[in-house]
Length: 282
Image 1 (tube, rainbow, N blue to C red):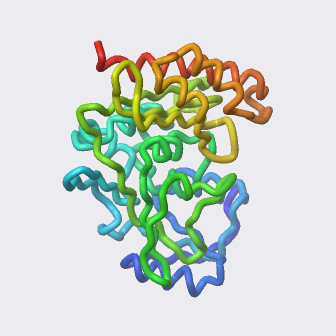
Image 2 (image 1 turned 90 degrees about the horizontal axis):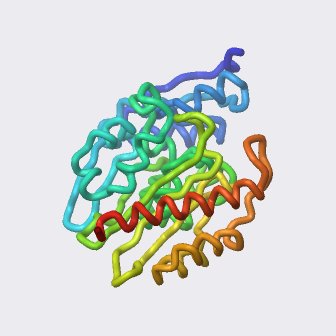
């Protein structure tokens, strides 16, 4: 199938893109990496009147470290982040997740901002951003604002980005000596969307953890924090945390697995990820 007809414009700057969005009366889509958008266009699940190409806006790309924070431009490619020593050092959870995202050809083109803006509930990066307490910078006609990851994902494929807004960057607290991270997912084949996945981040504290976040993906319309499991694992109780997951999550049945199967797999993943969190203690 081919996409429905659309007009095309190449944005020269962020402000130019915002102006184009404003003039489109809600009938435009932004083209970043295009790895999700092109498929939805071809299947006619999306049929914008105007496609706004933001690939030429250099200001939207890049990785920067300043003091205790690392910032990623929204147009930074997955492959750039995967190969970045700054990401490996200051955002190790992102580094753990990257090899699980689709395949190299897609990571070469797909963008960090595009992935979180698309907000697929089975995607890796939205859950990572919630686990890292990331902050999103969004620019629109009324200026710039910042939104915490916990408030950014509103529902199935829905975010805090408005129809005339552009996600410009993502800020992440930099890892420190106490930081511990873990990541795992279960898929039918490597590169597929996850049946169940888990992103975890916290700081070592005694035999447990402080500031611990366990965030599941593939189990709801948005990334889901497992707060009861967090409380147990923060005290070093891995078995208790695995049991608590069943009450933290209420995944729906889907074409990949039943909700009961997903809850079971979530417990399996928790034990695997807990082992990753404990690796640096050895």
